[in-house]
Length: 294
Image (cartoon, rainbow, N blue to C red):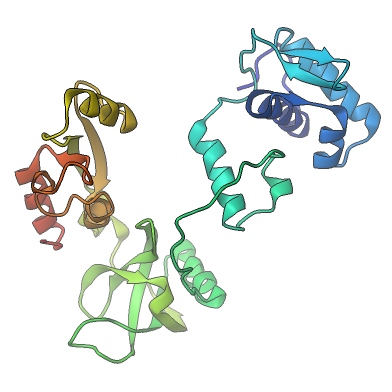
């Protein structure tokens, strides 16, 4: 997002983004912040602050009492797009222990808690091998525990993986199954072992449920008040009372389940279920097409 007549080196631009991040989200930044984050010299940190002021002269004011630069009332981003989702993702990652606080660029962390889900046990060797099969477009023997009545015990089966999916709780690999001659989802934690690789199966372009998409139109629950509908519309980024979620057919079941939209959501209490599917009949037909009929 950086502007100006001179192209900046990546490391310099990264430090300018950091300065702007601290100014926007935390109100200020000083030289030691840059030194601690990027392990640069005092002269380099001073040079970065000077360069930032040259590129964005209206954004920062030096506060002598606090000994740091603070954001001005005329602040306008030059090096990053302030994105609430991005900031909250950093905050969530810190709260969940996925990244160190020092790597988040956040110094003043508000008291935060997360509605945790049990961490899925994914074997690193399994994941690395599956990634290799996706990258090299090869098939792979996996020792897989299904939950079907037909296969109550783990069995070896050959798959040709080509993509990954995340339903908000679990990771799975999308793959062609050589046993059933179908493209399916295989949960990574249920892959108990990996075996030999071989020639790949069907081309991923033949996985129609992965390649094709369906538009789920959502809207506020009809039993909400006008003001409640307005805030729900704002919450979900709706325009004219609705929004369209473009979803792969292979991910449709997971998306609807996560949003509480399996079945007729309009029959659920508006107090707990704030959105409904506007194109309900089409969505049900799409679920049938995706072989996930509710």
